[in-house]
Length: 205
Picture 1 (cartoon, rainbow, N blue to C red):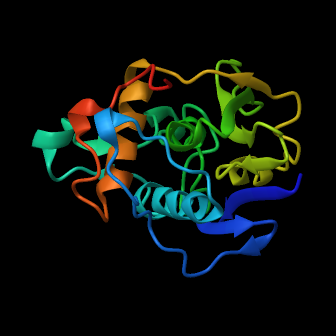
Picture 2: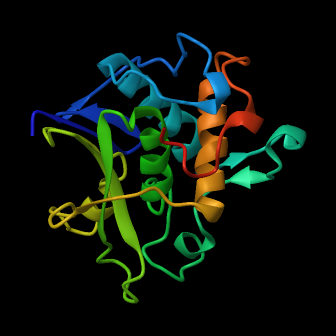
């Protein structure tokens, strides 16, 4: 592949090089009618990846202060990745554990015109109900997989092998990615989008 973006120990990494001083995402325009489609420039990709890492992954979840707007008390991974039900647990040494769909789902909302959503069965789940998720460009030469490290930590180096293109999820996952994109878009531009305009699912036009 020509471009591979991931994270290592909470740091944003491109083609094995740690990216330093990456700024959080700042939209250039307002998102009309909740359409979060964003040009897939390398600057936008870097800044949205950095926003995901800084706001959600490094602090191991986000506590919600303004509950009247978001209607949630927190945004975090499922309890099974924390309480030992589906080891290994998320920890300071395993920050990306359990985040793959939420991260890929958020990125897809912004970049679906240029990137497709992929998934593969998760080898860490004995019940074979979990999946690993990431993005690949339409030409498949560019890959964004911020959460690969959880598998590298377990000695799995080929997690994306046999991955298949797929669709976004709805229900609670759709709601979480909706709120995550809203937080990212409005962090540096409070009027960038109205939360009521963002769809929980079926956001591709």
